[in-house]
Length: 256
Image (cartoon, rainbow, N blue to C red):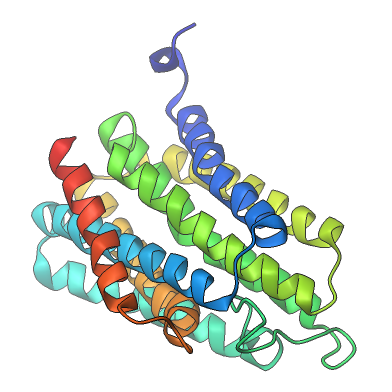
C-alpha cells in the first residue's frame, strides 16, 4: 500500500506524528544540550518568526483567497480570542509554561499546587491549532506543504526545548515531562485525523475560515508564550534571528 492509498484522516494523523517529533527532540535538547538562557532565546526567536510566517504567508493568504478578507478577518480574531481567553484561565497556575527557568522560573508544585496539571493543560492547548491546520491542509491538498510541516516541527522543537528546561528546573521529573510531550504528540495526531475527517464534509470556503481561526490562535500563542521568552534578557539581534526564521519559511514556501 502506498501513502496515497491511505484514508485522508490517517495521512493527517501521520503528519501529526511527524511534526510532533519536534516536541520529543526539543525535550531531549532541553535536558541535555549545553544551552543557557540566551541560547534558548535565540531558538525561541527563530521559532516565533517561523510560526508567524506560517500563519501569515501560508494560512491567512490562502484563506482570504477562498473565503474573502472580511470573513477571514473575523475568524482570525475569534481564533486569537479563543486562545487568549483560555490562556487567561490558566495564567494563575501556568503563566510561564514556555519559560526556560533561568530568567523567569516556572511555578513549582510546592509553591503553586495544581500548577503541574495547569502546565499540562496549557501544553495540550498549545498543540490544538497546528493539529487543526494539519488535518485541514491534508484534506485540501492531499498532504500539507513542506513549509508547513517544517514550520510546525521547528516551532515544536523551540517550544519543547524551553519548556522542558523550565519544567526540570521547577523540580518536575523527566518521566513527567516526556510523558507530557508524548501525550501532546498523540493529541496532535488524533485531532489532525479528526479535523481531516470533518473537513471532508464541508465546503472549501469553510476550510479557509477554519484555517484562519487556527491561524489566529497560533499567532496569539506565539505572542503570549514564545515571544516573552525570546525577548527576556535576550542576546543582541534576536529580532534579526526572528526575521531570518520568517525568511527561511518564505524561501521554503517559494521553492515548494
